[in-house]
Amino acid sequence: MAGVGLSATDAPRVAVWRDVRILRGALQVGFVVGVVALGVWLVSNLTTNLDRLGIRSDFEFLGAPAGFRILGSDFEASGTIREALIVGITNSIRVAVIGMILALLLGIVVGVARLSQNWLIARVASGFVELLRNVPPLVLVIVFYQVTLEVLPRIQDAAVSNGFLFSNRGVWIPWVTLGEGSRTYLAVLLAGLAAAIVVARARRARFERTGEPARAGLLATATFLVVAGVGWLVLDPPITPSLPVLDGRLVEGGASLYPEYLSLLLAMVLYTASFIAEIVRGSIQAVPKGQTEAADALGLSPGQRLRQVTLPQALRIAAPATGNEFLNLTKNVSLGVAVGYAELLRVAQTATGNGQPAPQSLSLVLLGYLTLSIIISLVVNVANRRLQLVER
Image 1 (cartoon, helix red, strand yellow):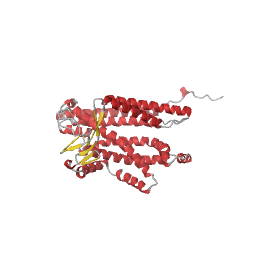
Image 2 (tube, helix red, strand yellow):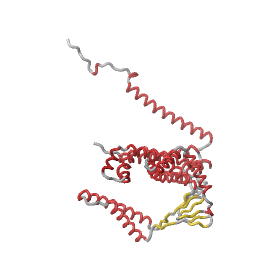
Image 3 (tube, helix red, strand yellow):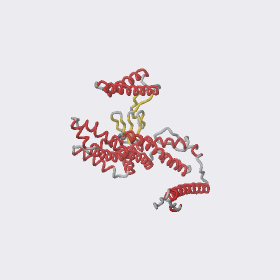
Image 4 (cartoon, helix red, strand yellow):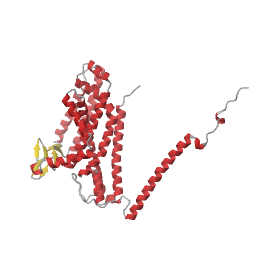
């Protein structure tokens, strides 16, 4: 007689306390409950201690007068704490955004230079990387700050060269003054940019259809310049140059980069660029050797090979790691507190020193830098997806 097989319903059941799926789910639920309970306990403990010390636990203090000024801005002591924190986060963004752009450009140049066939260029680039990436960024900030104060001349003896003014109160650079039609002119520039993009696409499409030289870049640039020039003449000019002029101990015109901002920006750019340079160097070496050989077979010059073949593929490889360096730069902006730069943390510390509640102030600092980091992460992730190769 043939054996009778067991059906799925007749299979022996596993005990609940031995079921892997149930145990995994129970552990996850327990972990979440533990984290929530810990958070509730911490908040309860904080509010209890604040009440015991007579410190408010709400955020009503944001509407109170700040009682201090912020260097390099129009913020006065009569402004509110909320407005001061907004100025602080704006100052943090100024360093972060400009620092990321300059660090990326400098990092690419140094990374390419490290692979140069010229012995001197390669060694100078290598020394740049090895020196700066092995020094704490806080030390760089303080060193640049002291150099700015002690090496540059006093304001009454400021050095002026080609529209730039150097003194221990900061560096003034040529800038522009916006006229009444500046907003309209900005719209004109955007329209010129849109027209240039349309012309470039039309020329590329014509090239694909007929094979005639596209000259897309040349014609697109000419279109933009024509639109910008006509708008400039019609609006009588909406933007005028402004050069710094020394008048005794005062400087009029231009844009000022005061020592705190300049030292922090230089430190962040150089420190971050040293890491980006290594990322770029490794990414270039990661490009398959066959790509270089194919470029040589097509008769491309070394410069064309780098610009059109090697570097575009290397930057695709370097994008994720470079995004991490952007995040590090943004968070390192808080080191400006060491030299008195009015970024978000410095403003919160000043408000706390004037009697405002520290827990709420510092929680806003955490929230501010967390928000900036998340935004940068989202932008980097979008860029990574756009740069990925589409495979079959």
